Image (cartoon, rainbow, N blue to C red; front, top):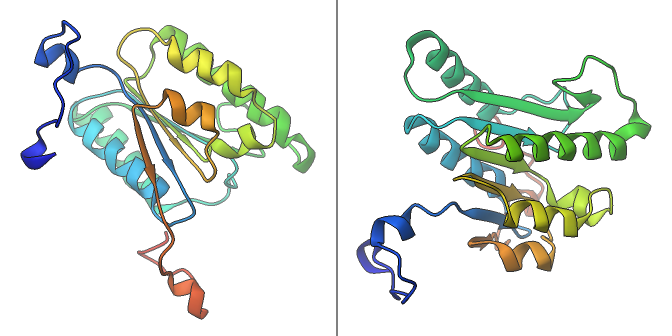
Length: 204
């Protein structure tokens, strides 16, 4: 893609602008580092365009506050106070979802994942967000907690212009098949390979 130009111009009857503005399903997968980081980089770009952003974190503990969360919540506050950028919601599945007042337990992860997916489906149907980031969403799919066929149906027939980013290892082949953009992060070298733990400013 030299100078950002596509290598193929399809004969689909669409104008360049129509083709450019089609909503994307993006999958960041693979064993390498950077899947979530890349997703939140896009979220920051989207915020700058004034988009409504919804972040849904599966698997990660609700007590673990990653650096990107602090940045995006600061941007959300800036939007609320000044109108700059777009609104951002951040929800975690840990001990129950952050929108739920009931406290979950360690045995409730499957139920919580299903509750989160049901809420995401409602928001997709309502066209609540311009961009949805479903972080580590591949894992509850792989564990059988969320039905991949339901995911494919929901994503494929989503209304309007909603972009979706899914992150996580071992993305289901059915998800990869319907995605518009798939990046596989390949593990070549990592400091942990030689016993160096994650560090402030790099991992969080």
